[in-house]
Image (cartoon, rainbow, N blue to C red; front, side, top):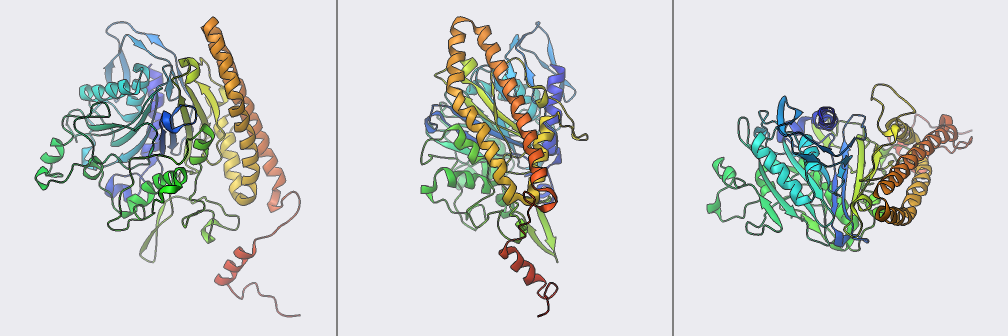
Length: 535
């Protein structure tokens, strides 16, 4: 337990520590890295899946982790929590990455919020809360109870956090912030996403007004309003409804640009009929805030969710594959920092869902019509979602593919899945418009095969589970580990093909030059340098 908690803390906190920049210093909203999350309820999916997505963005090499179920002696403790100890429970559940054996899945994004509310005297950071909740909960509601009970007893030490929590039947957003240095517990609110809806958050608190008398759909700390009143952030005599996000995570135009733009882009593609304007995320005064959740135009399958998490605002005025800033081959890569200044004027690159800073991402499925060992699956991939290739990891498996569990950021290795994926994505940006077509072909081939095979694999596993549960677990463990390693091998081949086929700027040994549009842009900047005199 000590090593597992320490690993989770070091990996997840890396993304938080590396986030920042001038905007973060002003507002507490980390804009450089961090995460994007989409929640899909059972009624919004084609097969009754509750789906949670999580992009963990930050400059670190991720290891996929497995924690076996365990029984614990009375009086035992969990160590590694900011130097303190947490009382252990009699039994903890098995966890594969970010889904447990009961099909409970958890993701997050950091919203920061009011900086003065961070409490470094608390014992529990958000990564520790996530791990402990997965080890101790059978449902999403129970996970919320576990997390909020733990911070009430031991204190919360992270800045503001939005958690996505899903189980077989429900999807919830829990938003939490600390009480400030030396304070007790945390301030929080949790809202159940209506069935048939999807929701998203991306480094900005999104729960606004909420019902105070509907415990089936909304839970909150006793001090969520009174704490704000005590600090002068809310006055009930104003007769304005209390809004959690406005009070605890106030945001300016530049904050919205890098947070709400990602929510808008998910919503605009899932429900184009809504015609959601860009005004709010562009900081237009008086613009209406985006809803916490929406009903998509059509139900989503897993492949649809893969696609929603791959985005650079293509097809909008903010398309990062267009313009001189995309270079001659339409690359959406923008080197950090996001904010920059020229001649005393401030500017900012767009911050997309797909970013090179993503260490790993997942899409979980939790399904009520299947036994737990088969119903819960985490689709996982290292690196940028645009270049990711998702492999299934069922919540019952007892081993992981070695390539997903090894490597470090200082030493390149073809044996580590993270480095294999990073090689392909980094090299592809040299001639992005061309190479992404090759990446998409292999990506579609592999993911398409997994998705086509899924019903047969699950039917076989479910049948085995009725006769011999241990055999079903062995079957799914072998399937996940062997096929994930095959995927990494295929991705190595893709990397070798790309460096051969696009060697030295040629494409298959032939030169295509630059597009006319790009050349005209060059000439606008230096109209005479490249001019040839008439013969």
